[in-house]
Length: 183
Image 1 (cartoon, rainbow, N blue to C red):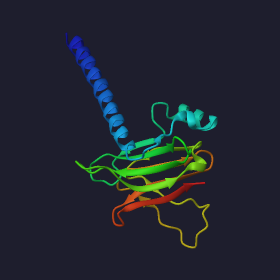
Image 2 (tube, one colour):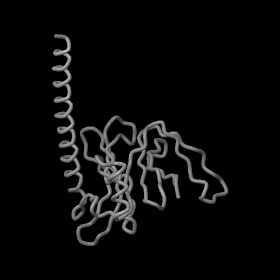
Image 3 (cartoon, rainbow, N blue to C red):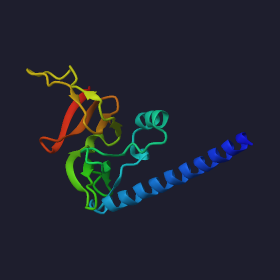
Image 4 (cartoon, rainbow, N blue to C red):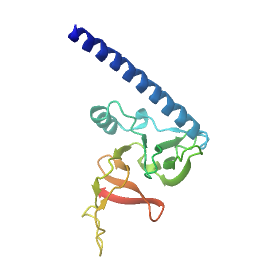
């Protein structure tokens, strides 16, 4: 009897988890569609628009994740924000935008980067709060910046086979900062 009750509880929990996941995914898609209205003529960069090597890597290592979207709290205010790779339908211009989404207000763009020349190889991944990021040694500099411990989720922008940059919110400066972590 205990085993049957445990099984029923597990089935109910799994069913609710799946439903909540679908609702969450549907809400994210709805939010993303709303955000795209702020960028007329742009769409979220698709997997098909990546080159074959980048596409194969993404499918192997991140099969269930959209490589053009990171949905997390970047500024530490408790609200989910967006980093999105966008491509223009007509001009083929591509860009990365980071949007902060405070509670009960519209999202605002706080960072934009032209990635047109790299749209076939670029993808996004979240970087966990508490991670330490540091500049690659390959960048020659008279003063090497000290490693930075992320106080909220960061965004890793990877140019497959070329370089990687971590973007993070600097609370004091109230802006996105960049650290090239790979070359």
